[in-house]
Image (tube, rainbow, N blue to C red; front, side):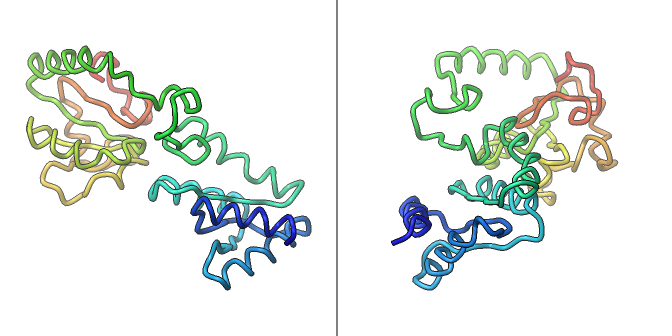
Length: 220
């Protein structure tokens, strides 16, 4: 057994189905091991046209499936072509490098750990917002993955329309009666009509101007 075979065997043990990326000379033995793994029904290689494309594919795969995703690149420019994706991952606790929600909080990103002690206070604040504002709109971002059904149920309960950010548009079925489309830049006319809301309840995205269409901070 070679070192590459050992690495691939560990990937198989962790349930890794795919390794995305572009091969290079230093990665030759690894891709040989992946080919052997694929023949026995194990981890397989997915070749991409560019390293950043492979990294984004791995990131998207991890976000949508909740499984561990792997991306590899050769040395030099191959490695530097990956830089955009780790930056995106570090800003998003739903993604690959830090997506281990079942582990102890000490080994996760603090932003991804729910403070259950503060949950009651949060619910009280939410009740206050709903009782004082007649026209409430839910603004949904990409990072609400896994909570889509709960969001829809909540929207139906209070009768609130749902708008999304550009990255969050795949989280809500556009044909749902309460869906109004993309709210921010280059969004839908039906969503922009919701700009008159007295309060936006924002989940799954930062409060930047591009996401909130520069709505007054006190409304978000």
